[in-house]
Structure formats: structure tokens, C-alpha cells
Image 1: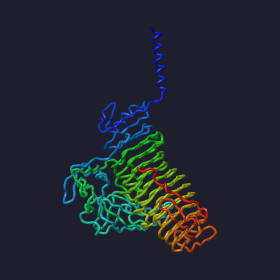
Image 2 (image 1 turned 180 degrees about the vertical axis):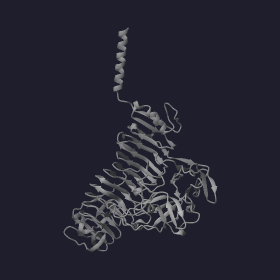
Image 3 (image 1 turned 60 degrees about the vertical axis):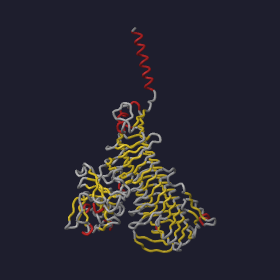
Image 4 (image 1 turned 90 degrees about the vertical axis):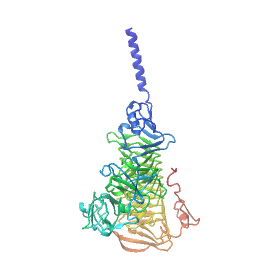
Length: 629
């Protein structure tokens, strides 16, 4: 009897051991609008409920949270940590899944002839504040004064800007200079409500959206509730706008948050029924957060097939590129994670924000967001569409990389500032299609690189970027401390300054085609040791190349419709002489007989000098997204 018992225990232990050696089976936790978070076996009603259940089954990792079709509202972010490594969060097959980071607003009451309002608990008390309102699937327009254009303030800040590398301002701005602005008394009326008002102060390459703490009518001075990024009046810029006041409610489709009265106010568009309207106000800055640490990073997490909408931002200046805000998807310390097939729309801050690298971002559509589209240094950003960014913060950049970032085959358009900004070591920016960038601010471009080392910009197509003044706009821009970079095989048309370079050294610009229907400039202030070779440069007007003493120009074809190709000698930023560039043994001043370029396939006539010089033909027609959303 004892012997049989011993043998039974032996075989039981052996079977348990063999089972333990088998690979663990993945477990799927389903989320459904008809589910319940009290369920033991699912489906669950919320992603957070399913995630809690999945964490109780650690032995069955890796987990999949499968979300059925429907809309899901959250009032707290979904947070994944290093303990959730291996998780997949995805929409069910062919399911339309939307996660809203906010609440539906109802109980609208008529207010005057045109307006409707709804009371919101917490707004008057200051516990609920937001800068984005989504109405029937669109980001509604905030109340703005003046309705068109900007106002002019009287603040002065005449301190010299020494460049970023040179340390910024020659004298550090005081706290008072960063928090005050002198206005013209006729610009702000007697009904101005300090608690509601937000001021956008324009700088050169960024802006500051700040609240108002107080107003001194006698001194015509506003004091901000937080510091601006630069003093009002810096760079000689004196533009500003007022948001979120009754004076700014001038047309249908606008809204404001009346903090003094504790309600949201909306002017419906023609045909909108306030009994049927769908209005969403955000409650969170992020909908999904991956929060790893250096000791326990988030690894091998996939988020796929979801639509994320409705987030907010705090009331503070966003800084350069509006970089201070979180994303609808916000990632910290990740490794081998993936964001795939996401749509991020009508969000107040960044679409996707990654700190620490380690993420593949692919086939996403990020659009109509308040700040940047994608900020993800050290990541792969491939085959995405990013458009209509910077709705609240015009300093926003569509795509921000840095430090071994790969940015390829993205389509980027309708941006108030730069389309792609990248720096650091060994980044690669290839085959992107960029247009209609730089619509508001200055000193940026289609692709803008700061302090880039060994970067490659290749096979990109950039077109139709207007110069709106200030420090100008460019297609390809290598800025301070960019070194050993290569800009090759790119096409630019509809950009007056296709190549701008500043305080950069030892870079190569070759095999590019630049076309413009007016006067064109290629600029290299305070640059050294540039090689500019085998480029085809065609302008209907004059062509001017600045700082020619620091350039090695060879085997280029330059054609000016006016017959004027000028080289300018610079001392710092000032012209120290100029003269015509002439045909020589290496550069050709002749009509290249350009036949086609707007399709991305660049073709020249059969007897073109381009062919005779051996300059390679260009085809960037596959630049941009490889598959449409």
C-alpha cells in the first residue's frame, strides 16, 4: 500500500514537471460594450477591467486584449508597465474601435440669439479645464479675437539672440519680462474676463499660449498666469491673439469655456440640432500610457487597430515644437514595442509621444491634433500619414525624431511649422512626401535638422512651401552643429529657398533637383566646408547662392530664366561682395531642358546637358505613404 502511494506521487510529480516544461499558451481577454468588469471569464466592459483580469493570470502570458467594435469612454489613462511586457492590445478583426478620453456633454440651454451653454461641474472650481472640444467628429474652433489676423502689442525686448549654440539671449530675460505684455488700450474692451482669457504670444519659430492672471488698465499691462517661452517683443515680433473670450465668439462653429460661469458655450453650425449633437470634452492628457523604467522597461507590447480621440493639455507655454505636452499615446522607457494601424484624431496634445526610443510606429494616421503628430526619437517612423497638426500650438512639428531615428515613407502636410525635425547621431530620413508646411511660423522647413551628425536625407519629395516672412522657410535645412550629413537625391519644387544651412560644417549636398517658378536662393550663412555637387538648380527668376567662399561647387547645372546666377560673399550674415557665377570646367550654366518633375519622375530632354554630365536620373514618385489609410 505504501509502495503504490509512493509510485503514484512519483508519476504525478513527473507529469507536473513535464507540463511545466511546455510553452505557455497565450490567453485572450475580450472587451465588449456589452461586457462586465465583474465577470470572471469575460468579456469585460473596459480595457482596464480586462487588463486587471489579465494580470491575475500571469502564468498564461503573453496576453492579448481583444476589443470588440464600439466606443469606449475613459476618465483615467490606460497604463501599461514593465509587468505587462508581451501584451497585445488590439481591435478585433474588422472592428471599428474608438477610445475617447473624455465625456459627452448634454443638457444644452439656449443663451441669447445664437449661443447654447451647458453647465460643467468642476470648471468654475478649477478642477476641470480643457482647450479642445470635439463636435460631431471635428475639432471645433475656439473663440478668437480678432476673428482674422492678429493684434499688435507694445512690449519691447531688444536683447540680442546669440543663437542656440551661442547660449540664447545675450542677457537672460527676467521673470517680469516673461510674464507681462503691454497692450494697446483700444484692443481690449471693457468686458474682458481675465479668468477666461488665454493669450497666444508669437515668437519667431515658436509661440506661447498662456493664461491671464491679472490686468492693469492704468498701465495697459497683462500679467500671465505662467511664463512665456520668450518675452513678448523678442525677435522684433509683436503679434498676439486672444482666445476663449465672449468677444471672440463671432461666428457659427466656435466655442469657449466660461470658467467664471462654470459652463461651456457653443455656437452651432447651420443645421446642427442641439438635441442630437454629439459634443465631447476631454478629461485626460493621455489615453494609453506605456510607463517603463530603466530597471523594468516595457518590452514587446503591441497596440494595433484602435482610434484614439479627445485629449487635453495644461495651460502653459509648449516651448520649441510644443514639446512639453504628452501624447494620446505616451511612451516612456520601452523596448521592441509597436504602434500599428492607429488613427489618432481630435486630440489636444501630441498624437504619439515617445521618450527613450524603442518603438516601431507604422501605418498610423495622426491628424487634427493640437500639438505635434509624432514625437519619437530613437524610433522607426514608417509609412504613416500626419496632417493638420498644431491646431492649438502653431509651433508644433508633424514628426520629431533624434538619435538614430528612421523616418521613411511618411506623407506629411498642412503643418503650421516644420514637417520633420531631427537631430543627433545617424538618423535616416528617406522617401517622405511633404507639402504645405510652414504655414504660420518662420525659420524651419520641410525637413529641419539641428545638431545632426552623420544624418542622411535621401529620396524625399518636398513641394509648395511658401515663405511667410521672418527668418524664412526652406525645403531642406541643416542648422547649428549639423556635421557630416548627406542631402542627396531629393526633389524640391515650389520652395523659394530649397536648401538653407546655418552654422553647419562638412556636409554634402548632391544629386538633388531644385525647381522654382521665381527667384531662388541657396543659403549657407556661417557654414564651412560644404560640398555642393551634381545638383540641377532651375529657377524662372534669378538664382543666388550665399557664402560661396565656403562651398566647393562642382558639376552642378544652374539655369536662371533671367540669366542671373549670383554668388554672394558673406561676413557673418552680411554681404561682403557679390558677383556672377560663370560657366567653368565643373559647373554648367545651361538650360537642362526639364520636361517633367511634379510627378516625382524627373525627366530631361534627350539632348540635355544633365545626361551629358552623367548626373543620375531621379525618380522619387514612390515617396510618401506606401499604402493609403
